[in-house]
Length: 129
Image (cartoon, rainbow, N blue to C red; front, side, top):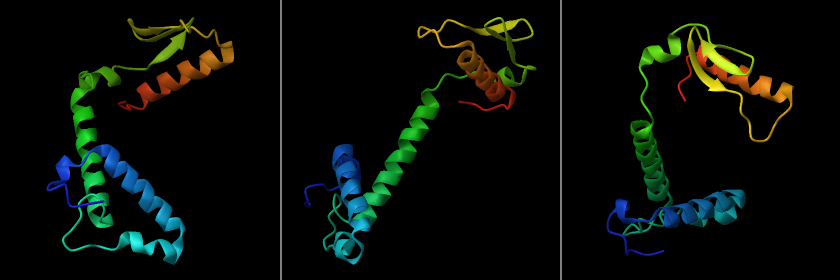
């Protein structure tokens, strides 16, 4: 590791991930791995455990926020329109049909039913995916 990075945003994710793996491995070594948690002066942004962990946490939060922004938007009322159920290979709520059984793997009736049960349960519990 080095002082070549002057800002945390410039560190490639691959470098952070490699360091996270090293820190994870160091934790399993007990006192022998504690040297990996030393902090250096001047700080090495791609090595010092506190900085690497903070940057990884920050990057995960930023990526989740971006994913949230990019996911398809449906009106909040969409999931609370009524009672989602399935019958004859169709998931529906009233006259609104959102899925038809068309599995390319041709699962058993039991597996298909479990899949559709899960979808209906998720919709009825107002879980937004």
